[in-house]
Amino acid sequence: ERITADLLTAIGRSYWKAGQFDDALRIDLEALAMYEKLGDKKQVAHQLRYLAQDHIDAGRHNDAIPVLLRAQGLFEESGMKRGVAGTHQLLGYIHEQQGDPTAQMKECLAALKIYEESQDSSGTASTLTGLGVMYAGLGKYQDALDHFNRAVVLLRAGGRREMDNLAYTNVDIGDVHASMMNAQAAQRAYNAALAIGQQLSNNSILGRANDGIGRLYLRQGEYGSALSQLLIAAGHFERSGFSSTNAARIYSDISTCLTRLGRYTEARSYLER
Image (cartoon, rainbow, N blue to C red; front, side, top):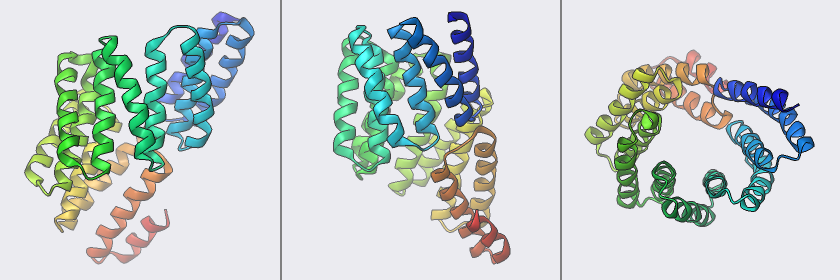
């Protein structure tokens, strides 16, 4: 049964990487039942974290919370500090999506404390990024950049294994500079993310970077350029899988560009999507 459970876990992760979150959830539930039957608490905890990630990436945040809390308890029982920190991070992300910065900060700081005490540079960097996103959402842009820049130092030191996270952090930095109306700095950050995305052939990174550039053009009233970038971004996202919330936002932006360009029939079709 363990061999079968391990194989199912690998299949579930493959579905998740392909953006097929419901299929990943179905397989991960089968694996979870097997690990529970085997009485393997550590693997049950890991599997619960996978299940929570499936729910989160499918946009079902409320379904993920009780799963994460159960995983956190098992990680604590097993003395797996990194696992505990990871659940705090994911709970912080959920609170961010739900618009609760106080709860988000509490979870992120709990994770950061564990990572720093464990001298885990990767975990520290990802938590600093989460805090940066939170500050950006509150309009505290300099605080956001300070946290992002601390994360970038750690991520660059991590070399190739941290390249994808470095790319996403560059997108976040670009978003902050765009909000501060610093178009040149935003473009530099998005271009840095694009370069990494192209090197890794990562549709998710490419989608976020093109989306950022598209929104930057949109703010500047350059609707043709914005449309070009947003359509490229949508193509990348559709190949990698993206949440209904993000899909609705990018299709709305595409519709806005088409409307401004007088292409009303096309604009309506994207709005209906």
